[in-house]
Amino acid sequence: MSIAAESFFLTPGFNGTLQQQIQQMVSEGIVRGRYRAGDKLPSSRKLARHLGVSRITVTLAYTELLASDYLTSRGRSGYFVSDSAPRQPDFAQPQQAQKDTVDWDRVVSRQFSRHELPSKPDDWRSYPYPFIYGQADVTLFDHQNWRLCALRALGKRDFETMTADFYERDDPMLIEYIARNILPRRGIAARPEQILLTLGAQNALWITAHVLLGQNRTAVVENPCYPGLRAILNQMDCRVVAADVDEEGLLPDALPSAPDVVYTTASHHCPTNATMPMERRQALLDRAARENFVVVEDDYEFEMSFIKAAAPALKSLDQEGRVIYAGSFSKSLFPGLRLGYLVGSEAFIREARALRATLFRHPPGHIQRTVAYFLALGHYDALINRLNQAYKRRRTTMDEAIRANGLEIAGQGSFGGSSFWMRAPDGVDTDILAEVLRARGVLIEPGRIFFAPQTAPRNFYRLAYSSIAQGRIPEGIAQIANAISETGPK
Image (tube, rainbow, N blue to C red):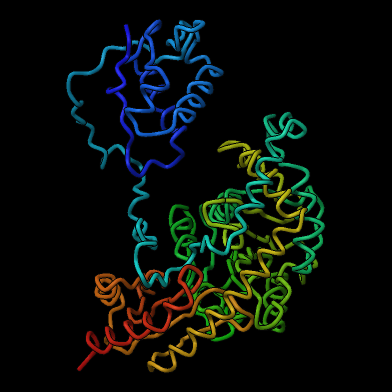
């Protein structure tokens, strides 16, 4: 049977080339059974004319399908569906959707969906004023060199290593670079046995909670703090205590008695951006030694240092192995990378590695090797330098716009970062403010979710400048000021 050229059509907005779209149309048709073994494909000339593309585009698509055994060529007769082409199992399709009769509220032992986390619209890039945290500006990323590193990782030399199952191990090339180049920038010395790769900082914090906490144990979190950490700890059977912070971060003297684990963002507090001074860090370590507890340090955004150099990590002062350090490449490279790492005593890393192995063994090998090359070839440092220059300009522009419009800064990092922590007037609910602004094309992050729920104020919010063009900042800030004046107390 001959397949009519009219059965093919191009889909607007396809994420790929015309050649790839033609390959996908043919391969999907074969796999799903619409085209069967022996069916003849339209000639390249006929299909090209029907689709309005060049004949070479169709020819190249057919050639790729031939190499993948979807098609076979019969001399001058043309292309046919191969007898050995991939195809789906021929199962009978259900006539109608199944009715779900399970009482999931009863069956589910814990309802994880009840934990509130920050949200942002999927189409945030379409908003003219996206002051949202944690998203990358693709115009600043070094896509060309990242692509070259990814291709190198796929090369024959690395392919066997990359495709092997590391079991519980990580890519030694990446671990070595972290140990010799990344950690020394934070004043940390660590052996490979003391480093574990994770799927981002969130996964790193989850691992620490499951290794260190359980019934009859107490975890201390900063108030306000990273909402993802609170969601993790709420899943545990431990006691969670919120300790208020001031303009210099966590206060060691204000900690509850007999904690087991204290979580802190000492160098760049989330979300206020406060930096804990050295004497307070030492006081925290001294108390940890006296009361025999462990400190987990989430050291995010230390690379974004364009005002002055970031302070050494809390882990760098640790002489007893009491600090577990969590780092991530998700902010400095791009959030979709989902690659972070834990640094701690070998005994802790051994348990963390065993826990990780029960979940996913290790992060994907190709991602690990690509990042290793990107770091080793100097592209990472060049990217950080470019980001710092861009962020410094945006920060200056935002700072000027905030002050010109009479808005109040509640906290800002002393060495850089990518956001401002803001306070609206009393009586302004920033959840409502965010909805008003969203309708006007402005995205902000309400601050309520960062605080302990029982005492959460509603007039704080965060403004990030990592994902908004510098030229749009002044008008966006003006929009925020106007909305506050409209929604605030009269």
